[in-house]
Length: 216
Image (cartoon, rainbow, N blue to C red; front, side, top):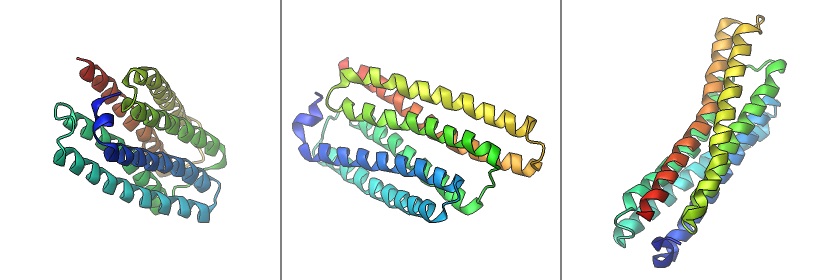
């Protein structure tokens, strides 16, 4: 158990609430994209609105945590690292909000024979993010357990990259009925979805480094 747990219960409560928000944001992203692919406009809009609300709440919670760290001089040797870690986790919920907003604004067209691939891509990318949040949680209570949890993050990030490459190849080499502009548009959304797992990978690397740092 790292020192922060012993010195400020309020900060830990806020951090836990923050992680809950991020996890809900990731879940709503997955549901939202699948609702979009299924043509369920009402549920898609509900997911979008929920993500926007969660992202705003997460920003407010981070400000509280930052204030507590500075006011109470919590973990002065590692405070900047921990706050930077939380900001990078915030990048995940920012990214899912931006992605779903792009679906809403640009309304991409997905042919039936590519929808399943995109649904799988979302699932893989989300799994990477879903696994990095528990790893971040356990850092604050049992840092020694972080490493094992990060393996899944990296695994799903790599699988996301593989499937994304396959989708892009399919778009440009097999789907001749699509206009070039449509192919480029779908490639753009492939990259958007990939970025969620990329953000999770960044957090995973930071966690791995931070665990080593606090043990020194």
